[in-house]
Length: 395
Image (cartoon, rainbow, N blue to C red):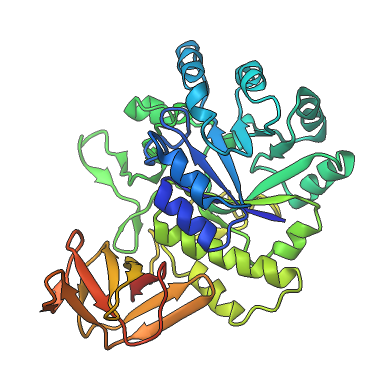
């Protein structure tokens, strides 16, 4: 099964590939459901061509297109042609003739936004020219297997990890209604994640009865996060072809941790020996997430209740290691404060973690520094063997 990871910018794309993705899906400015991600623009296609190799790259053009959007996307066709895209992910059938004219040999994947949930609909999309269907998230594994039985030649992709939407296949109007930001145009304000006070007393306006959860308010609309790391064999039995991780808005650290864990478990499922498999799994439960569930795959009882608590997080992402210097230093792309003497960990594509309590920090003039924060130019000298691309974190 192909592992498909998200990338909201070039840096995340590099780490998704480095940490085990077979394919990565990205958006381009203004035509993706994640417009708040950095997305891709200008001459970044050149860098992608240089790093992509034999891995796959999918372009998400999955907003609901209005007439003005069709005019704008046609003006971008020459720019899109510069990218080494292996498929386009779309939900709006109005794009079909345009993409067929410009990219007659590039496969088409139907976005989950089209909410394809039965084999008859999948058959129609196949006959229209779609090579792959990214199924609606409301299906059970039994229903997915039935679709594959009817259409064995059609590729099926399903989500296995990440945020779930309150609305059917993501077709939510809360954001447009409450914040004048359309989720279907890629500008969701995520009001289902907001905190709410309810039950205002009619006799005392402005006095609310709070729904309490631990030390704060619960998010009464927010769905749980999907996690299928422990059910990959059952997924394989359905015959699906690709597994997708949600999260183009998530951090580089999240992308790497989740991609790596699913990569290792898929390798193990294929009979490839993987040392420390459980350590990779544990990180899935330590990265920032809401309460996990299995979505609709085994019925809907788990997903019917909203998430009962806030985000959980075990580690703090510190930064990434760049190229080594002749004196044993490494360039450090710092994202959070780091202090000498504070234990840190390095993680790599096949290294669960390495502890380091004796690293040193140096400025560009060669002076030792006791600490550094995001934006500072510093170098790190580790006390354990590391490699460029390793990620730093602290507990």
